[in-house]
Length: 144
Length: 112
Image: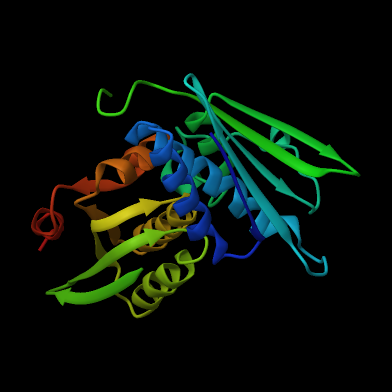
C-alpha cells in the first residue's frame, strides 16, 4: 500500500497530516499503538519543517508525506525544500535532569528516535530533503 | 482545541479538550501565562479530554511548571489518557510533573 499527500509547510497542515497517517494506517491494518507512535513521529518531523525549515525563505513551502506499508513494516517519508537539518545533529535531552535544569524544547527529535525503529535522512540539491521514518509492525490489529 | 478555566477556591482548573500540536499549543501557552501572570500559581490541568499531544504540548507544560514552582505554586495534571501518558513517559515528564487520576484528587493534593 502506497499513498502520498503534498501540502504546504504551515501549522494548519499538521492535523491534515495526522489524519492522513491515521487513515493510511487504518487502511493498512496497522495496530493502534503503532499508529499513535507513527502519528507523533511524523508530526514532530513535519513540525520541525513548519517551524524552522523555511525560515527566511519565500513561498511556496512544499511539504510532502509518502506512506508505504507492507506486512512487516511501515515507512513514512517526509520531504521538503527547506534548509537542510540532519537529525543526527540534534542533541539528546537530559531526561534525568531536575525540573529547574530541564531545557524547554528539544524533545521533537528525541520522540522520533524513541517512537520509530529507523530514521534515515538524505539531502541533495536536486531532490531536497527527505526524512524516512521506518517502524516495524508490532503485532496484528487487536492483538497488541 | 478548547480551553475552559474555572476557579476552585485557591486552585485554578484549566480543562483542555482536543489535540495539542504546533498549531494549537500557542493558545494553551497563552492561557497558562495569563493565569501565572495574574498570580494564580496553583494550577490543575484537566487532561481527560486531551486525545493527543506532540512535543509542543510538553513545552507548554514545562514552561508552566517552572514558572509556578519558582513562585511557590505548581502545575498538576489530572486524568491523563494512555496515549498522552506514553508521550509524557518517553520524555521523562512523569518524573517532573505530579499526575492524579482525576481533578478532585489533583485539587485536594494542594495544601489548604
